[in-house]
Amino acid sequence: MTPSRPSLLRLREGHAKVGFAELFFDLVFVFAVTQLSHTLLEHLDLAGALRTGLLFLGVWWLWIYTSWVTNWLDPEKVPVRLMIFALMLGGLLLSSSLPHAFAERGLAYGATFAAMQVGRTAFMLWALRGGRSPGNFRNFVRILVWLCVSAVFWLLGGLAEPEARLWWWLAAVAIEYLGPISFFRVPGLGRSSLTDWDIEGGHLSERCGLFVIIALGESILITGATYAKLDWNPTTLAAFVSAFLGSVAMWWIYFDSGAARGEHRMVHGGDAARQARLAYTYLHLPIVGGIIVCAVADELVLVHPGHADAAGVAAIVGGPALYLLGCALFKWVTNTRRFPPLSHLAGLAMLLALWFAAGPLHLSALALGAATTTVFVVVAGWETAALRRGNAAPAH
Image 1 (cartoon, rainbow, N blue to C red):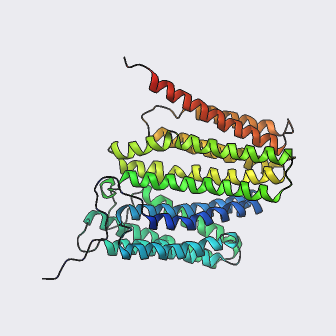
Image 2: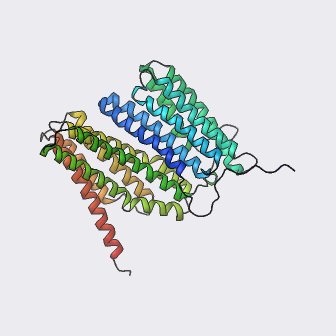
Image 3: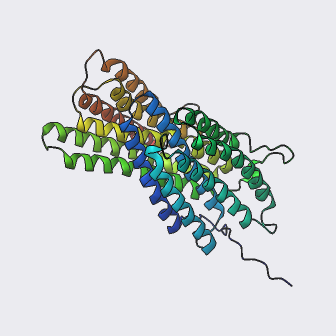
């Protein structure tokens, strides 16, 4: 009798622990986030924003797909660990290509992206072989079909001239992002179902929280590194303190209550797969993207605290708006409330008013940055006070 192969899947016994191999893997994405913020800063115009945004969609998608896979796979098993390290090597190569992905390193980016997506999915099928979780095996067969189709567009984009590359890669991103929405429907193979996505909710929510920390850490890194190179005077000190307080307020807005409530919903809400797809896979995009744009804005304010041009205003106000919008939607769908948090909606209204007032009032970059930091602090304080009052209210 042939002995059964050892399983590479996690044992579902309570909360799945985030392994050290997963945290080691995340270090590559610290570099990726840094590369994205620097790329946006160097090309701070509409075309640069579109291209950097497209690259960010790819980076996030690689990371979140890997987090889904390691929700099922056990990183303590040697084959899984080796797969993670192989993805790290690919991620390091891909991150290195980001600044020139729309120039001479397009093929490196497209080919590496396609190889990581297809290779990881093929590994998952190998791990599920032998009748382990038949529903999830069929799920990953469908996923592999979708990713093989998108891989063609990634490769064609990498081979195309820089002017046409954007369109090929937009098609690739559209295919990848439509996959979970359509449950990876494949002619002849049907579609997946939420029951196939039997994830451990606490693990995925913790992984996404760690990525938010990565992005915030990159923002702190830019603030410190930039300030260290400047003359220390009252203006740069004010910009430095404003940037730091803004990062603290962003941490507070996400982690004071939102992260814990989201995890509670994932673990106890009975709809972990649906929440994982909507709240964590899709709605964390504006949260992380907003942090990256805020990091760019912080550097702009530190280096050029005087007059802000249209692109500077868009970054200084748009980053906080994107972050607040993502947090508002995330908290809305992970809580039983009819509307997004009022504090966040008020913050978005204040940011919109700042956007329109920046030109007529001739606000400097420093004044505008300080104003957006004030909005963050107001939102954080408002929500915290409201939640504390709600918890202190006597039961009726």
